Length: 322
Image 1 (cartoon, helix red, strand yellow):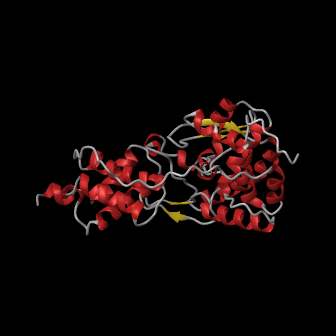
Image 2 (cartoon, helix red, strand yellow):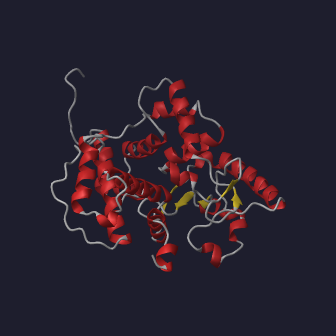
Image 3 (cartoon, rainbow, N blue to C red):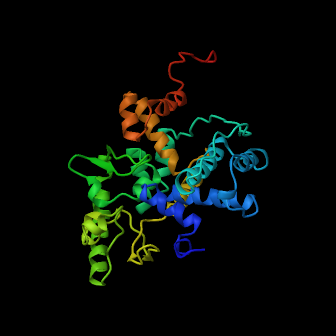
């Protein structure tokens, strides 16, 4: 083996580096790496360059037949492996035929009624309540709220700039006027914490892409800090920087689960249910479907149309019991 081959990153490291350069999200990066690893282990650690379409078909089919995964999970696994062959191995594998597909079941999203939302909010408090208020009041995804930088909150225009949303797209959405006083108080506490961190020689945050090279001191500016920073510092594996990451999503998930239970709501809700409720309640209030599509950041209006089905709009049917 020559020196170039010895110094070449390991296969999964190559996948991560290539995806990072293409600005894939960290969750997608980890998901793809995990599927590729499972593919390799499924074939007794055989190197992917020694395999092809038949081995891919066997693995993807087994997910549906033996593990009973959903259609979306099966498709994600396939996309991860195809990414490996196209972008890392540069190997043409041709068309993969006769894959045993998982049954595609279309579920309507779970939606809280307005009364249920109020009941759940009664059992939320502090930072968790603020974050869920952004999900319900602005239609944010949980990860979008947690990754929100202070500079992207516009109090004057009462809007939030969501950067690098799903599909790497920026969008504006509404900032609920009712939470502005509480949000300002929260950010004031974050400001004081940030100032204290700087005095300790810390207080620098991770910047996206290559902005660290372009603006070396931007990571210490208050505007670049996460709106919802974690209580503790962590060491970033890539840069070695001791920094405050944002609150972990599991913290908010636990708070919501507990609040739903205390409120006596029997629906299988989660933080994402508040985003569904945001869209549905806007429709109930007579807002235009295209506007809601833009606020949610959906690429196609067809995706947004699911909320009309939740409302049973257009059926014109009244129960005979009524």
